[in-house]
Image (cartoon, rainbow over all chains, first blue to last red; front, side):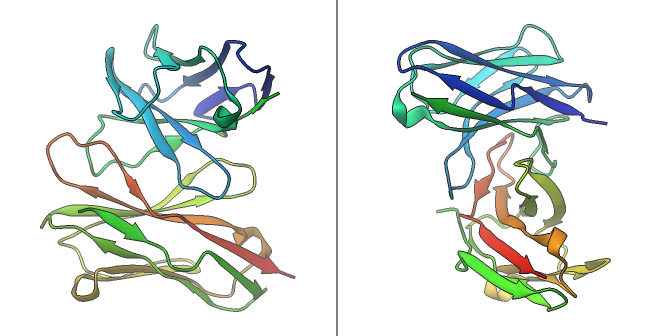
Length: 114
Length: 116
């Protein structure tokens, strides 16, 4: 059974048109992460939530926002997608966010920007 | 500085061959954790193993084994009798034990192709 679910699997948007990616989890984990992964690169952390506490990475562009309305759901909003934002977006969770915890990943959303 | 190096970008083997994926890390912390994740073509990253810096025991799980050597700052991963289903990108990662640092430091990954 899928524990971290991302929808949609593929998303196509137009340059400058806002887009929202969604993630849900059945693990009841406190921490949810959003990663961006471009082709042949390692995942890059954009931000994470510890419960309702939002933590942005210093180099995450302002174009990227996130919402976590409840424990189960987390959204990634890209306000004005550029061509450089085409990537795989991975959602992940961990129980408490401690350094020794493993991450549980969703299957990702592949975003294309036309 | 914290860094993870996976020098092998791509490896191609024939089924049933053994293959070792190298991982070398840099950290000044005395306590840290090392991880391996597998990313098959479907895209979902899957946790394989975690090792803390005080536990240098090697580990075997079925066809998978890991060799952790602090003296050389390496945490290598070996697949014995590889299978086509092992084809994936494998990432080695590091977290220092600095309070609530939740940020994994990733290597660039090794793409493994196992051919029938």
